[in-house]
Amino acid sequence: MKPNHVFLALILLAGCLVGGCNFKDIDKRVFVVSMGIDKGDGSDMRVSLKLAIPQGNPKEGAEEFEIIEEEARTISDALRKAKSKVDKELDYGHMKVLLIGEDMAREDIYRVINWAVRRRDIQRISMLGIGSPSALDAQKVKPKSERIPSNALILSLSKNGTESPFIVSEYLFDYQRRLDEKGLDPFLPVVEAEKDYFVINRVALMRKNKIAVELSPDETKIYNLLVSRNLKTNMSAQSENNFYEINLDNSRASYKIEETPRGAVLKYKIKISSNLEENEVREKFTRERLDEIEKIFEKEISRQVSDFLEKLQKNKTDPIGFGLRYISRHWNNETEWEEWERLFPALEFEVETHVRIHSAGTVH
Image 1: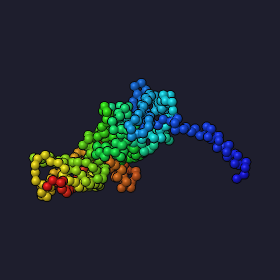
Image 2: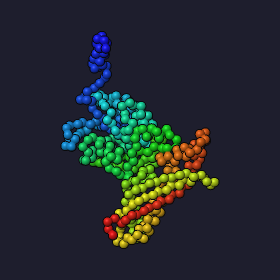
Image 3: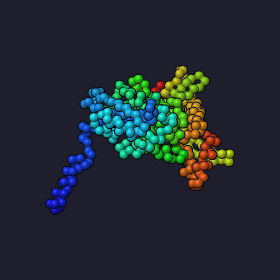
Image 4: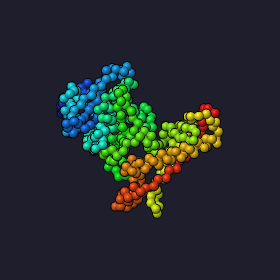
């Protein structure tokens, strides 16, 4: 390289380092780990930012956080105003959780999702949830087991920590896809704030951009059973004189949609491998008795699944993607979606459950 070319390159590099790159040192940044968006009192939006304040070794439990709030007509304007409340640059590169207030989720959250996917510094793998009674209340919770700000919420929603059958994980990229996809509706986990902890045991099924219906904890477990393989959970059933609990070792659910002269039928097949975990009264468990208990569980699980599917049908929401499955197997693009909208309200459900109880545990 000629000497004058080298000199020119050094001048351009020096100019970039002086200020052309807008680079901020890490000690001049404050990291946003989670964000909450609620309906404002006097404005359209109330944005709350949870800021991590590192103070040494996280294992010592000395981590602290700060929550700043700002109200404005738009989310972007609220974030700009929030910068006046901190002495460092707000960095969203480590933000992993976006909570939406329950009041807003019942009306319309399209603006929130649309803003989040447009921001270049918001990760598409950010986890979404509904804060109850508000996103701000959920952000203020600090469990005693938490050592890093928002880490308890991140571990719960991502299932990297607890593996609960009552928790579902939803990400920004997946919600955006479901928002625009025909035959596949979004869902959001509900994060309920308590005094020193939060409870995540319900899921809100969305009708695209607002809540259609909230599932109970038991219904949430059935939803996870249908969409997950090898769900780690228990199932309950009752006979005339005993109450049983089984622990699932393996589970699998599949379905198909068949069209008959009298209408469309959705046929679900569920296979479960389990062990008997608990019963109320003393009883001798022979192989013949375990076979009888299997039939009790098959009947009960089929009933619960049928009730769950009818609830989806009644509330006109489709988080599993029955409609998407239907139109993907029909080739008339002009009428296939209209045909599914006609079929879904009158869809019949047939659930076939096979339960195998391998043993009664370590007690014989």
